[in-house]
Image 1 (cartoon, rainbow over the protein chains, first blue to last red):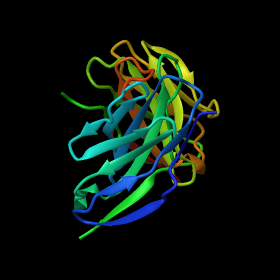
Image 2: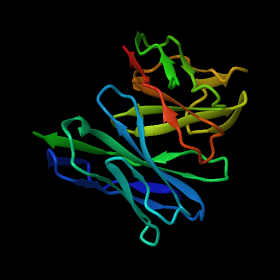
Image 3: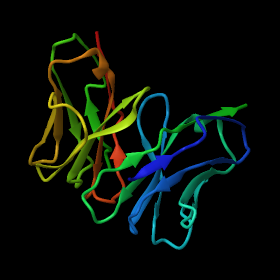
Length: 115
Length: 113
C-alpha cells in the first residue's frame, strides 16, 4: 500500500536557521512524483517543490531543496535561512506517474519560526 | 495567470441541508480534484475529474458528488449535511492529472451546525 509518513508533528526553529522536515514514503511503483506543499493558516495549499523518482539531481526552488534518497525512500524538505513567513503546516505528498491514481498526503508538520 | 479559484470561501449550513461548492481551474488545466481536510482525518481525496469524466474516487459516501463542465470548471455537492462534514474543502487542478503537479485553490470552509 502507498503511504507517506511525516514523523514530526511540530517543530520550533529560530529565524534564519536552516530546517529539515522529514518525509518517508512507501510504494511498490518504480515511477512516481514527490511533492511538498505549504499550508498557511488561510488554508491555501501552496506548491513548493517537486521531485521525480527518476530525477538524478535533488530538486531546488529558491530557499527550498528536496533531499531525495531513493534507496531509503526518503524525501526530506530543507528550508534554508528560515523566515517568520515560513511558519505554516507542511505536507509531503506522492503520486504514481502514468497511472490514474490519486495523490496521497502525509499528516503534515507544523513549523513555527521563532523571532 | 490566475490560480485555482474556489467559491464560496466560507459558508455555514444546517444539518440536513445540501451545499454546492464551485472550482475554476487554472486556464488550460483539464484535471480537477477535490479534497476534504479535517483536523482528525487530515487531507482526504474525494474525487478527480478529467474532461468531464470522473476518473478516480475516494472512500466517501454517495452524499458527496461532483461534476465537471466542458470549460473544466467543477462543482461538488454534499447532500443531507452532517456535523462531521464540517471541513475545509480544497479543489486542485493540473494539466492532465496523473503525476502532474497539482495546484490548489484557497479552499472553502464549510461549517455545519
